[in-house]
Length: 192
Image (cartoon, rainbow, N blue to C red; front, side):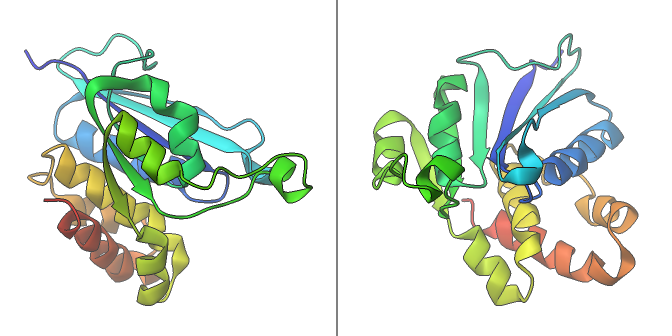
């Protein structure tokens, strides 16, 4: 019986966090895992915080990741990593996209964006910094940032034996299939 694994994907509305979680969930289910997914996306369409929780194993009873139990937090935006760091288990890992998306209080001058989030994260947990947004732009489409980050999850959780190319082919618009397969491979290559 496989122990339940917990993956937390966090970001800002419009970054594709939920799409990445759905692709991950589809692959895990096709591999035969019991999978539960939940998402929180209150004001996500207005640039608010988004959190997708994916739990998988032999027998998963709840879709909710409790504080201190996430095996990995994948942050599509670095402030969101800090917002959810309390969910990480003591020996868990953080994968963070090195990008800033200012929340409204910062934009209107009511708050400051913390200047050393990466440094703080590294003090709190094993942290891998990825320039996924920059890589996606270099590939010609910033929207594949989420699939690059999905690739980091796949590799870091040892899920690279699943036929992810088929998952992409069956769930992505035909004109974006090759780009997404390339993005996923790039993400996997970023994790040792």
